[in-house]
Image (cartoon, rainbow, N blue to C red; front, side):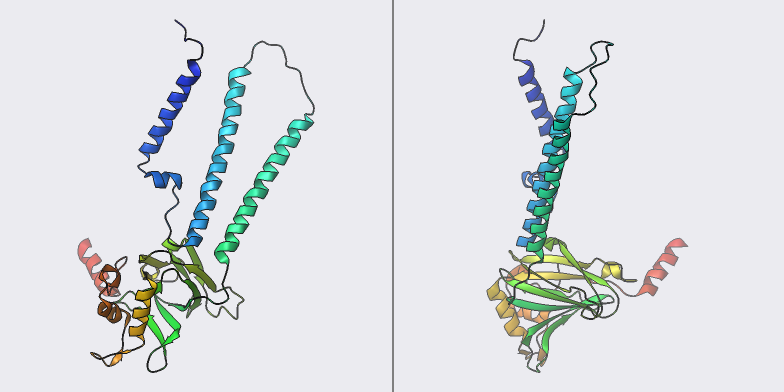
Length: 310
């Protein structure tokens, strides 16, 4: 018995919807992740702008794909070979050629426009940012200086990483922040995955005509891992740091302590000492929570390897 009139299309729609639902569920993604098409979440408006560009680009690509697939299936279904007679031949089809030339050109122009607009937004720099931090990279750690804040001795407030302590880059939320990058030796790369942004860090950038400045705004409090994203030597993979984003009032308290003398040590407060003194919960943990220091004792590693091979 054949299908009743009008039942074939609804059944195809139901089957297609079921297949789509199974595909979404099988990915193991949350609804939010599905809508972002795999783009990770960010914590800056610049990251959100890039996410929107990615999402709409994928939607446009899927729309084009569905159109092309539909035309292919339509041709296969309704224009199959019906006889051995040679179809009527055409040398030119000017309307069709204009369509498949103009439409792709317009698509490229639109994609280029939104890409350039997003890039200009991400790279934009305010003339007077709220905060400035000097990022100094060296093999194989980081130093963060706050030139607008001074210790009692007149030196800029500074946090420097060591082999036993991963440095904390403490920053305020909801404030425009300017990062000035500089390397003491080889080329490094400043990368915070949650920013969706990285910038190579060069020695003597001013003498080599390199853009070593960028700005952003962090929209939420939290701890975010930072890494070196440029192969820079033996301990490149261990060259990590952590961004600790605090609300503006907490940041002011933190900087107020960093510019004072710790009576217990008779030295300016360090980053861990200031955070411990603030005692504001998880956000004031005096050590990094997204990464950890590394052991520079290569001899111990070598001995362990030798022992394991015997």
